[in-house]
Image (cartoon, rainbow, N blue to C red; front, side, top):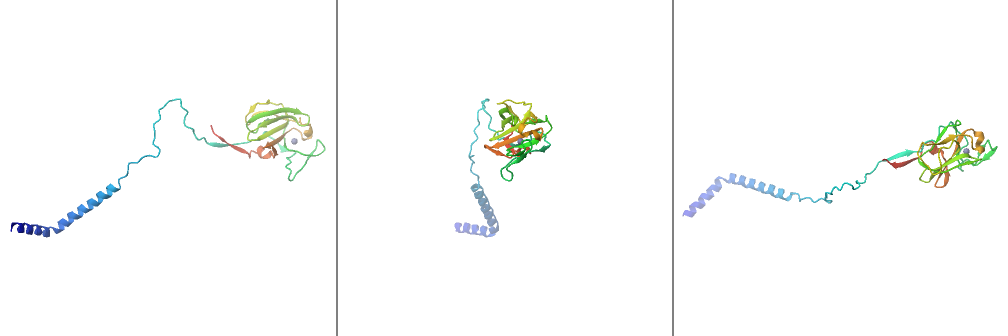
Length: 219
Ligand SMILES: [Zn+2]
């Protein structure tokens, strides 16, 4: 009897508060879902691929290598020339050039840069003087190794400013334009310039015009 009463009371309670109970159930369900999602998405503790280890500062250790910027360094014309005399014979369209001094046509593996007698002649690029000599045919000449298998010979010079074995910088004075090359005397004062690359004679004009450059690391 007593228990039947209790049951009825409970049933009546359920019936009277169905909406409220449903609401509470829903809230609990949502809370459970939110909790579950939160736990599932909790990020795992991250472990770096390359853990940073503090190095002891020992003071005299070399600093980390720095990637230096590269800059283009161009060859420069060796002198202020007024015109080009005998041109470079490249073996394609010209085999020989007229040599007024010798009175005929000759093979000419350099270019003649005509200038006023005494015009300063400078090294077109950094380098090392390989040789300084004086011959009847080509006068005073300076041969400079400009690196990267590029060797330049500056001939018909005078007032030589360098010695064999000397290191020169681009723009350093090596001599002056003159008429010392007897084979090219009639051209007047000039510099006879020859350039070899990898042991082969090449057209010096791109070097003179400053079209050739090297990429070097900037300090
Ligand atoms: Zn010449």
